[in-house]
Image (cartoon, rainbow, N blue to C red):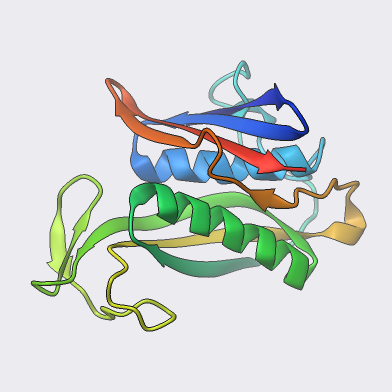
Length: 185
């Protein structure tokens, strides 16, 4: 799993890849954190493209290991990626913490007709809550994730204003998944 920051006119773009859809989406979220802050305490810098593999990601920053969870739903994989990143930006602004060490626990397609859900890889299981958080049953994808929050007061953070659909790409490739997302800064 890796990500790479790329220069983009008046914006910043994150190109990410991973062996699974979940890993790729988490890598985009880590790219969002990297776009917000040059140096993030306790985060494995080797996840950035070009770093050495096999480095310990635990770090020794003395930061709390308190994590928060979130769930988002959307009508497509791309919309789910957008909603997830948008929620991370919202939580950053509300909690005054930069979400780092992002982990996508579940990313699955919801089959609303049969009451089943299918994971991105094709597994099926029972759906406990068929409606989205706003009550619409038309949301077809669900993501559960967690992250560690670093207080903004303890870091030199730039504001990433919003995620955009401009040039957004999320696609399967031979060795996993690739994503490309542009953020407004």
